[in-house]
Amino acid sequence: MCYGTEMTSRAILEWTNRTGLEWHYIAPGKPQQNGFVESFNGKLRDECSNEEVFATLAEARVVIERWRHDYNHIRPHSAHGGLTPEAVRLHHAAGRLRNLEGSADRPLPPASEISYQIPGLSQ
Image (cartoon, rainbow, N blue to C red):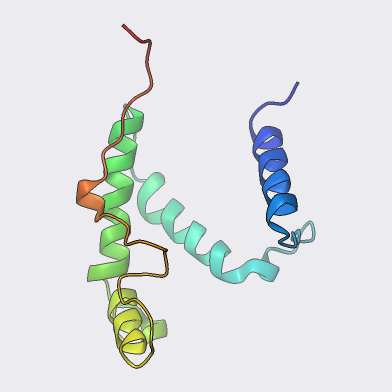
């Protein structure tokens, strides 16, 4: 039987096999091989998840979404010369032939329109 990360890993590997994408593991003890994600995860952990006690999954989603919005739309980043990631994305995208709303086949709904249903027993 598979539980937790084992099941997730199996699902991801099956997906990469179906899509033909190559899967590359980070070498054990080498988080610098994926420095951008490690940096982001550290910020999320230090600034959000370590500061909150979540009573429910719905509350966690709301708090994390609020942090994500602040991180991407409000907070200036030194790596971007004091601009927000969203401002940098729009600035660079304006000079290219691409969808300014993202690279999805169809525009994704704004976060305020996304609703989560808590799984439960059917009635």
